[in-house]
Image (tube, rainbow, N blue to C red):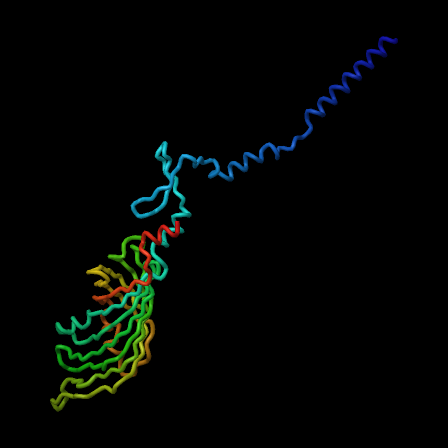
Length: 293
C-alpha cells in the first residue's frame, strides 16, 4: 500500500514539472526590441552607403557629383544639383534694351502697315526674363481692286510678359527663349472711298465709313533666338503667334489692322531686334557658382 502511495506521488510531481515546463515554453516574447534595428536600417538606406572613398567632382556644365575613387561609381546628390543649378548666374544678372526693326524694314520693301518698337528685358539668373514692350503702329492700305482705303493714324501699343531662357545654365553669348505677352492697343481707324458696283443709272456709289475707335487686348506667344555680336551688343530673331482676347464693339465693322498685333487675318508675325545688354553684377559665372557651393 505504501509503495502505491509513493508511486502516485512521484507521478504527480513529474506531471507538475512537465506542465510548468510547457508553460515556460509558450510564454510570449516581445519581438519589438529584436526587430527595431532591422526596420531602422531599412528606412535609412542612404546610411548604408560608405562615402569615405568618394570625392566631390564636377562635370563639364559645373554640376556636382560624388565618385568612388576605387570603383569609379558615381553617387549623385540630386538635392544639391537642384539647389546649385539656378545659382550659376546672380539674381540681378543684366538689363537688355532693344529696338525691333522688323516693321521699319518691311515698310521699306512695300508693306502698308507697321511702326516701330522698343523694349526692355530684366534677366534674373539668366533664366527668367520679365519684359516690357512699347511701340507705335499705323496703316494706310488700299487693296488691288482699289474699291476702298483703310487708314489708321499712328497709335501706341503696350505689351508686358515673360521670357524663359532654356540655356540658362550655359554661356549667355547665345540664348533660346520662349515667351508670352499680354498686349493692349488703343487706336482709331476709318474706311474711305468705298466704291460699290454701278446701279441702274450706271454710276458707281462712293461713300465713307465714319471713323471708329477701338481697344483690343491680345495674347502673344513667341520663340526667340539671341546671339552676341560683339561685347555687349546682340541681335535676335522672333517668331510670334497672336490671339485676340477681347475688343470693343465696332458698329461699322471690326478693324483690319491692330497696332502691335498686325493684320486681323494673319496671326503669325516676326521680329528682328538689335539690343544692348547692361550687366547688373560684376560676378562671373564661375564666381557665382563657387559662392553657392
